[in-house]
Image 1 (cartoon, helix red, strand yellow):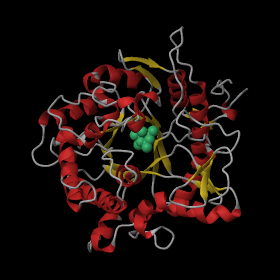
Image 2 (cartoon, helix red, strand yellow; image 1 turned 30 degrees about the vertical axis):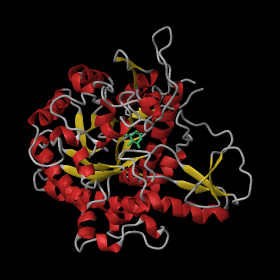
Image 3 (cartoon, rainbow, N blue to C red; image 1 turned 30 degrees about the horizontal axis):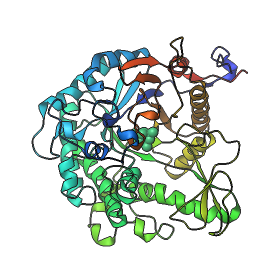
Length: 470
Ligand code: FCB
C-alpha cells in the first residue's frame, strides 16, 4: 500500500481550515506517579491491585510515567504536529479524598501541562472524569449515590477556577455508559460491582453529575469557554430483517439511555429494558432539566460497529458468533473476512460515517468532535528500530476519509482526536493492547514514534486524507 496521495490535490479529501487535529490520553492510563504529589487512591488503584481483575496483574502505578516526563512528552506531542491534546485530570490529584480542600501540588501539575501545551501552540481539551473516582467516594457508595454527582460538581468548579485561564474546551464525563455498565453492572472495570440496580442508579447520577458540573463550570468560566460530554456511541446493524428489532434495542441501551436525557431531557421509553433505567424515585424534580441544559459540543468515541443476528437457544453457533447474554436468542456476529483489531473489534469505517450522519440528523446544531478513534495492533520495534504499523495507517486513513465525507454532506464535525498519543494501560487488558501512535517500551519508558505517527503528521500538515494509490 502506498499513502503518497498527498501530492495529488484531486485525489484527496480536505478538512475545514480550523479542523482540530489532536491525540488523546487519560490520566490513569499514562500518568503513573500514583503515590506522588499528594495524589489519593482511586478505584482503579484498588481494582488493578486486586488479583484477577486486570490481565497479568498490570497496574497503572507507573504506566507511561507521564507525570514525571512532562517536558519531553510535550516536545514529543509537538513533534507530531498536533493542534490539540485531549488529556484527563485525575480527580484524586486535585482532591485526594474526593471532597474538601484542594491539593495544590496536583493542580500545579495540570497548570504546567496546560502552560506547556500553550507554549507549543497546542490547544488543551480537558476531561474531568475518565474513570478514576477517588476511592473514599466509592467507599461512601460511588456513582449509585446521588452525593457523588454533587461532589463531582464541586471538583469541576475547582478545576475550572484553577485551569480556566488556559483551557477553553472541557469534557465533563468520558463514556458514562462504560462507567455504569462495566463498572457497576458487569464489574469488569473498577469498582467491579455486578449489581443491575446500582448500575441504573449510576447512570442517572453520572448524567446528573455532568449537568451539575456544566452549571458549576459555567459560573467560573468566561463566555467563550466550551463545555461538552463524551459518549461512546455504537452503530448496531442487523444481519436480517428479523434481527432489526433486537439491533435497535441494543443500540438504544447504550446510545439513547444517554443521548435522550442529554438532548431532550427524558429517558427512552418502551424500547429499553426497565432494569437499565433509573427508578423514578431517584429522579428529583429539576434533574432532567439540569441534565438537558444545552452543551457546546458532543464528544463521540467510535471504534467499531456491531452486527447482531438471531440464533435460537438450541441452535449451534456458527463461526464468529457469540451469544448476547442479556438478549436470549441474539448473537453478535463477526462476519467472515472482516478484519479486526488486536482487541477483536471489527474494522469498518462506514460505521463512523453512519453514526455521524445519524447524530447530525438528531441534533443538527450541535457541533461534534470525534474525541477517540483508533486501533490496537500487535506492534513491535523491529531490528531496524522502526514500528511499521501499516494496519493502523489504513485504519486512520479510512476513518478520517469517512469523517471527511460526513463533513461534505453537512455534518458539523469540528475535530478528531486519535486514541492514543502513547501506548498505555488499557484498563482490564493491561499493557498488552497497544493503541498508541507512539510505541512505549514500558520497562525503559523509551518512546518510539510509529509509522502511523509520521502518517498522522502528514495528514495534519496537508489538512487532508490522502487517496490510496495502490
Ligand atoms: C475507550 C476509553 C479509552 C480507551 C479506549 C480504547 O472506551 O475511553 O480510555 O481505553 O476505549
